[in-house]
Image 1: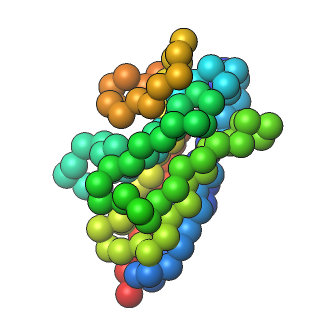
Image 2: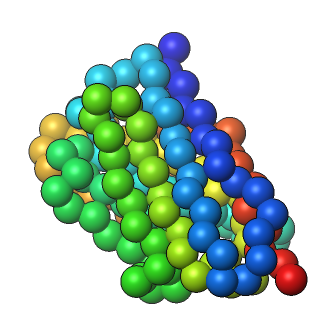
Length: 126
């Protein structure tokens, strides 16, 4: 059974940093593009960052460009999201997702992903 398990969320103050982790199991990690999405009450899932199968290519949503960094550790079947300079607009539940890709690519659309984690909440407040 495929499982994606997020961790690392919590309550932080503006300007703080946080690192989210997503551990994947039940799939061949290197065959999947990975991504991070976030959701707030009254809004749908918003693309945050994506990374290709190999980890060579990545993409970011404009609100997090320059502040967040996505990466993956192939030996640990784990994807990370390093979040720096957090602000109140980053408050959301963050989800990791996996999409099977036969070629190297970054996936941005939420409806293209095959598997989702349960989410980890991030609250940025003073």
